Length: 206
Image (cartoon, rainbow, N blue to C red):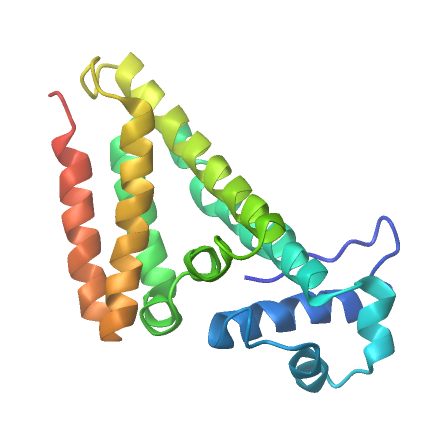
């Protein structure tokens, strides 16, 4: 994942802002938010404090940019299209496969960037927690759209609680990654994802 350059408003003429956000993302994934300091970011990109404070007033502002400009767009790309499929349940399983194929090594070692932040800051910082909740709301909206389409096409039963199902899928997906990180095992992630996909397909009414 990486932030996209914003050339329109001229904020990133020399690439410094982009470097700051990407470096902060990598460091927070490796060390966590609390243990990542401004100096760590400076050392990683080889810049001065003036470079950072020209764009950001604090580490918290950098973290907000990481969530809004790196993590959130990634969820839009990964999860935004599956609900448009003819069979959203099959497409959801395909999305999980794609995530495993592209990121299993990283996820089993470092965990989920969003999940890590939620666990670390949800009860400590309301500002950052509101931003991570925003990503969860976006993710849930994609799932709900897909399940609504599946219900309309009678792929899943009409009495299925779409909201609860969406929350369960998110919790299960994040739990799979947490277990694989705990075991530092790509195989654990595969087995958990396979069980999740089996459950998703069991929702089919026909």
